[in-house]
Image (spheres, rainbow, N blue to C red):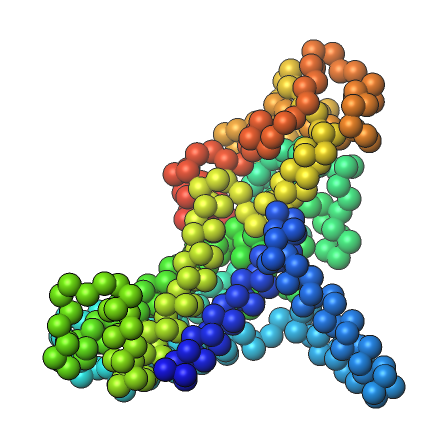
Length: 390
């Protein structure tokens, strides 16, 4: 049981650290334990290591650590993909070696169907174009979505990308790792060594779901094998409490260590995987992205501070029409709201005087309209059948 407990704690620690690295930088988690651990790992630990190096090695190691860290953080590399594939391949191999003889023909068929899915979906997600914006498709990218004047602004409010030297389309973002602007950029995913954007988010979701299915099937089959071993030992299962059953299940794990290890790996990693998948499904349903959620969280902080006011525009797209064409004019929803940030709470005298606009203090983000949210099913259609950058 000591080895089993150690393995469980190790997998749980890896899952927690992955969760911290994925979500720790979000403003809404800034004051939570996840945010605090993220700042510890991201800022305080490197500073501590640098201080130790300065005292012991006269700062000889710091340049190497900085270059290594910069490569891992700022450059595309396959290390995480190799880790994922090693974990999946090793887990499948151990399960087949130890558990294949316990499976029924139907279960063997399910394993044969499920096992290749993570490899196929990872290939599709990691090799597909996320929607890189180039001079040749820049016009199409501009026409994909309208500027909402809340988290995305047209020129001259937003300058051109400093790296690509192109006007930034609404919902796009420059990825410092991929060295390109990506249409409807969600985030750069280290698990696929690629950006997640307009053109490949469907493959990314398929990758997440494939991983979820593999972990769920693996956990259930391993649980079934452990339960079978327990029943074969002659122990009466009926009438046992859950605590007693789990304690006895631990005895089966001791007898089938490999199956027990895969069971724990699937169960604990499944918590992280299903949480991450659920988070992205929710973002799609809400008509937003990880990048946009960060921007909305910044507005939320200012709303709490009482410095955000909302006005209804008399006619949508008014400002853009003054400059000629309207990017994303085919989009079904138009912006009719204008948010204004004052310098200090209560200074309503700083609000601009615009004919026909009545300013109201925003009490919550729910009052603010997200024009990119066209309804759950329409949002999913936009993900599954995105427009083409041609």
